[in-house]
Length: 115
Image (tube, rainbow, N blue to C red; front, side, top):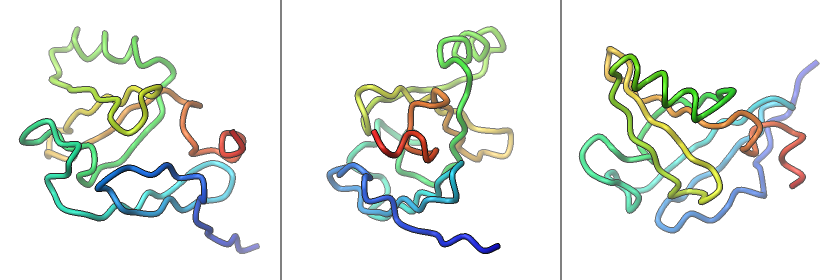
């Protein structure tokens, strides 16, 4: 069975950040982002939520931040794309940026796309 990839027409307008969110079945999305880097959302060098990254949902953003602090892992947060959704950003040892957000709070799953 082949699934068709379709654009999420509910993607919010993010000024200065063009792009498409592509639904991947019922359980995920691929976000294609365009525009200049650094973007208008950048907080400084290495702190641009529109820069290339992978995003993962976590059970608790608060517990995740506490664990990062306990381990001494530098991170930064933003609510620039959505005031109700805190995004936590870290870099892996190779320098790749990783976003961590509250599981179930984004449009990534089919169940949340109808909201």
